[in-house]
Length: 363
Image (cartoon, rainbow, N blue to C red; front, side, top):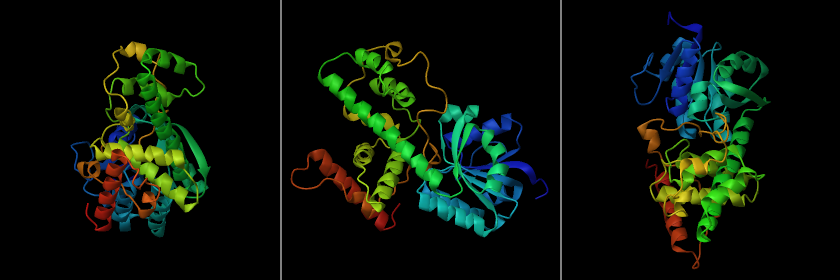
């Protein structure tokens, strides 16, 4: 197309992060063209991923899961040429990232793996942190694009898939921290201790983190507005457990965090923030004020603490309704037997339904 230039940037996927990135790039003077599976009334919305590739040399992909990523790069298809750099920001299994890279590189285009940590505010302010893999030449050319929406770019190495593994590993700690915090709150509540004293103790505790600073007050007030949804964190924990099983690792804490997220999915809370795991333990909102619950004087710096999965919250309605992938391997360590309690039986039933639907091709 006549208006294609090296400076044009394409953004595919207009969830919370994709929208924030597109807006931030425009404020910095970049010409930005966008596409989303559900049409949006936004500037420079084009008709297809292929049209994005016709107009833009740089294409940033912010879609929610493995299937959406592979579908998107296939749709880019024959429009890719050696002039293109495709930057993929989804949190997916390393194998899926490598498969996407193969599709792109088959067209002689260049591929940069760049999952990130950060949330809505960080995306809008250009304060994400990217974990990147790719060859040196592609990374050098892509760096200005990444720096336009980040405060740090961490190079993991040349091997595609390694950045995804790092991102999954960091999310394992995030999910486990919030699950442990929910259980700690349950203990404090059971012993009729004041939550304020627990919060005060956590301020100077070695295990204090930006994630807990953000999440504990919201958990106590039962504010589960999504910054990173339970279903997306569940997807990441499923990927982690599948990697663990493939490498003969006993990831007990990660499996426990996954099971609690599955339980919330069963009860219809998949679109809530992943801190919704506290719902199981806290029966009523804490009767204290927001000021009393602050772990710090200010919320942690934008872009730290938690990340938006795979990438990307609220991608489209069809993505919101998608069922997380469940493989037979993911079912191996689900408790069974006559001693299973009612919650475990419900969870097992939910898993079986998911697997049955996925095996039959039902969406």
